[in-house]
Image 1 (cartoon, rainbow, N blue to C red):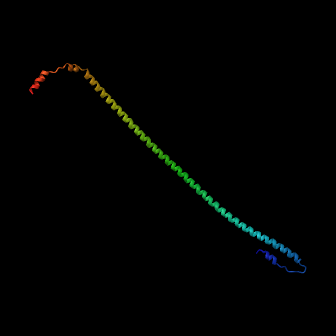
Image 2: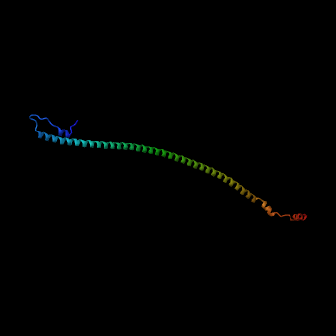
Image 3: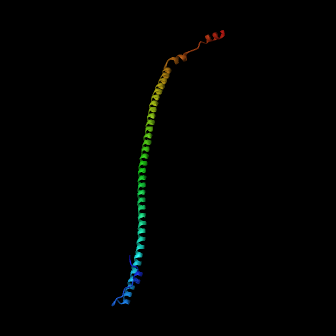
Length: 168
């Protein structure tokens, strides 16, 4: 067990025939007691300071551990967001490609339909043109015939019509 300043102060030495000078020993013991008391007080303060420092270090270690966990969680979350963004962008691109294919296919289908309608209209116009030409040619042939001259030379038999009218 360590000596306390009080133990040093109360220590008494036995006296011998030619012993030490009592005042000198007491003065020295008094100095030792003060120095020892100072050392004990300093030791106590250092222990308290060490305890506080250990608590702070423990607290900072706890904060550091929490921050490291938070950083890991943030990194994982960022990686999840990145992966989700990549996946979503792939889906958007795939959907856009599907829509583009659909639009192109619809446009091609409409273009084919229009081309078929154009061909059909061309055929109809050829048929109409041929029929119209044939009609006009037939009409021209009719005009060129001698029947018009005969028609102009025709004189009705009015006598015959008058006798027929009398009979009735």
